[in-house]
Image (cartoon, rainbow, N blue to C red; front, side, top):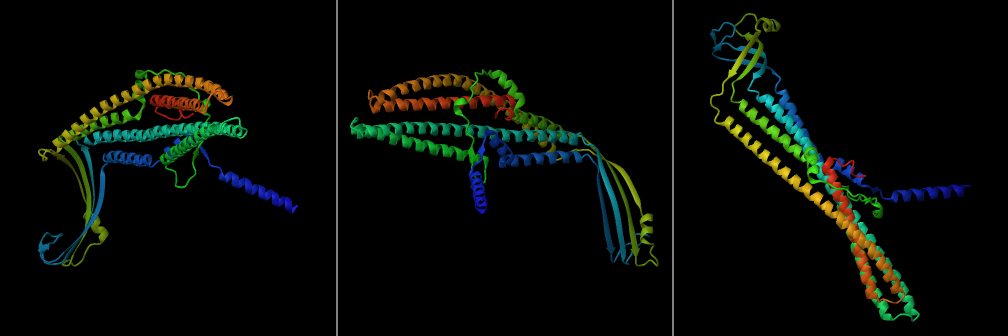
Length: 447
């Protein structure tokens, strides 16, 4: 009984160790979700958005009246004025005053209102800027993810080439031992095997480097195990889509945050001009104050109680202030001119970004349409070379062709296979890029 318990316990421990040793396989969705949540650049941009939100709230709070309270204690020695009789005295006097003041700006040329609007648009631009950083990161991760797939595909293809050479080398060695083949043929196939081992080693190292680059882009912690879930590259579905440049651009110009950000900045710059012009207009403010105090003089026989004096000495004051700007050292005119320059620059920036976006969309559509032809040709070439190599391999095993012809056929097949893989993955990433232009979101693309 005890022996059975020991065996069960040992079995559970081994199973747990095996499960712990397994590395999580990351899908493209896992990579993107992790990066969007943990990327430092996105977190920093999010802080910039929060700063813009604080500025927007501050500008709204500036419409409210201020309220301040204070107190002063004044002890007078020597020659002074008696605060109760207004007679010059040389006695010591103590004055303790309290006040409450408030100010409300009734009109300032709508400068504050326009500042609120400008900060609102800057906040909206900040939100779009955060999306730009996120989208750029997503595009980079998608490209690197498919680079890993391509490198792994090359590694698999190189391994297949190596396996073929090992298979033929084993067969040739047996035939040399039985005297059916010359020793020189063994040397030739071993030379080919050595070259295939080198190619496989290089392909494996490149695949490892591509995976490391993806891990670094995700900013994973040091020492963390990382690997991706490899799909069946042979079953990647390629659909014959056709994309029109103008249609994609019209959608992208309304969807992508890169244009929205500049459009909000342009609206903000126009409001900043209006806010700067408001400082040329007279402003009107409403002011009020409430004050009281306690007075004690050394010459007085008796001093009224503190509470009684606060009631008797209370003063109330309400008044309007009109401020007419006549000369301000050119500061207002300078601010208006700078705001106009910023508006003009933002307008040019928007036009430049529209041109850049159209160029990118046009190139993406042209590259996709060209890529379809390249993939079709590469696929047909791979199918042809697969059949051709199969025939050459049979002839080689029958002794009808030498090692050189066999190696040439195998190398040609390898190139055709890698080219078919490259054009397939390239076409897929180009399609995803165009669809990203059309949506601005990655959730519908990663599947």
